[in-house]
Each structure stands twice: as structure tokens, then as C-alpha cells.
Length: 74
Image 1 (spheres, one colour):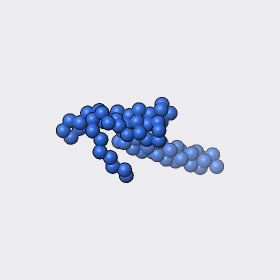
Image 2 (image 1 turned 30 degrees about the vertical axis):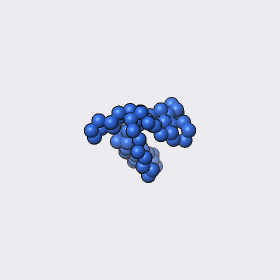
Image 3 (image 1 turned 90 degrees about the vertical axis):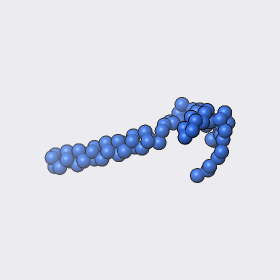
Image 4 (image 1 turned 135 degrees about the vertical axis):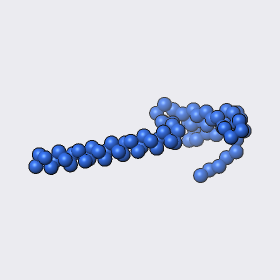
């Protein structure tokens, strides 16, 4: 993990097309802005993890349903 120090109104650039800017720092709260191409999804980590878990659960239930259907039609 790369760790950088930035002050408000300073930014970092990732891969030439993603900019992460520090907008404001208040006590324990940091407000950041992210500029990225629309083709790159940007989301909070907890939302990404929830979506991933839901996708895995959905994929698992589809596999179970397919197995049941195969047993019934055999």
C-alpha cells in the first residue's frame, strides 16, 4: 500500500486518468473527491463488498437450482 500525505486542495493522479482530491479535513473526517472515466466504477468499499457477497450468493443459489432441475429431469 502506498501511503501519501496530502493537504486540502491537493490531489494525486492514478494511471493518468483518475484524480483523487482532498476537499476538506474536519477532525476525524476527510472529504475526498474522485474524478474517473465513467467506464471505471467507483464505490465505497463496504458497498463493493456487499455487492460481491450478493453476487456470490446469487450465483450459488443458481447452481443449486440447476442441480435440482438436472436431478428432476434425469
